[in-house]
Image 1 (cartoon, rainbow, N blue to C red):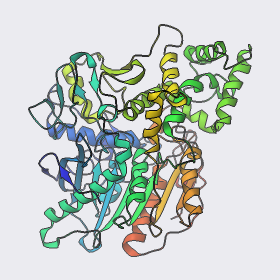
Image 2: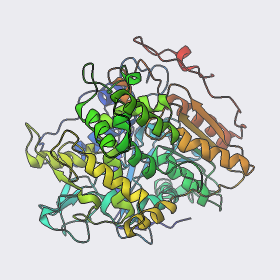
Image 3: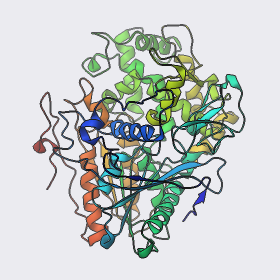
Image 4: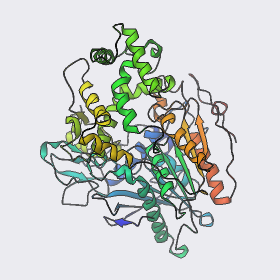
Length: 578
């Protein structure tokens, strides 16, 4: 178990009445509404920033739309008064700190001591798993979060400011900052912790989870001294995560040979096994290069975000032409070129239904942003030295001052820009296919054999998950149409590997579910796909009964839901057992 090394004092706060733990007093309607306002947009208070960060955490991974069923068919947002403890912590081998945050409800169930550890999804900030934390708080569990040494503590090299523990911006040297690069110049742009810390945080995600457990137990000792000590022997500990958070809890499961974790639930995990499946960097760079051409195929004409009007985006057509010009698509017929690009991806393991969902990631230039961030992290590149000539830089936002834009980054950023007021620059050319050069360069880091490519592969090799102990219950939930972290590249291989070694994980591969529940409010998405979160909640319900009450996990087959079409989601469509 990783000891807790604090890099700051613990910040303690009480949240009751109109400022609770679960929603900051916003309730379901407020979480789904307009962004929390700031009295002074250039200098928001810590309370305002916290409330917007909670709101952003919910909105980032949850379908809160009126047709989606949250609060009606699954999930709820009750008022949960309690106390909050936050700090910067550090792993023994790390150069930079990361955030840990523990929420302890007033209604903590001392008879069934439960601690839920929930690492942030994606590269989000410490409130990035609030939708999972809400499940725990509503059941009287304490919840401890970690940002996994990613997060939204962006450092602005122009004015030398970063983010303090309370979320406000502060100058370097005036406070302990979430992230401050070791070296930077004013024209280096923005330093993003996941990309520029030099700590290779992804390789330590399991250790971040186990360290967060330690922090949570220590805060329970402080909150309830008469009941102390809280230990893994007398407190049931469940680890749950989504996406990268799912990868983190599975990494922790493979490192937890001492038996601190009692149960693990992973949703759509970005998990990697040696010699099986595919690494995220591999298929993300492949998608960034090839997918625009493949999606010009007529078979994707009715897919959300695959067309502008009735035709593919001009840049996608240009990508198909450029791949042909490089000899990668030999036919001179445009339709045959599109089919050849599609066949290339199919041979690499992509399925048509997954490609259809992934069109949104292509439209939002998500593959290139993910690849750029991870390449920089794997090569341990500092700000101003990102590979392929790339950089993150501030951009003007109409109607907002530069100071107001920067002040909101911590509360509403994703950890992988582009974000509001931040763009990805470099590796571009003035052509109909402006991102081609950076897509080629990022792919070459995977396919090449120079020093940088070998360094990147070594970093990726360090990400493989270890084998969990035999008696650790694990439940994995993955959308069958996940277009960002395809199950065929990740969960399928991981579950098969566990079963071949005698373990018995539960695995739901949910039809018609994709990666981003939040996207279900976008045109064309909600009528085609079902949310994944209700299946995660169902798995957590059963896991809680298993670890707290000793009820065996059911061995149910994957649910078979139906998309809702233009109407509201119903319980029958979800096909969940009571």
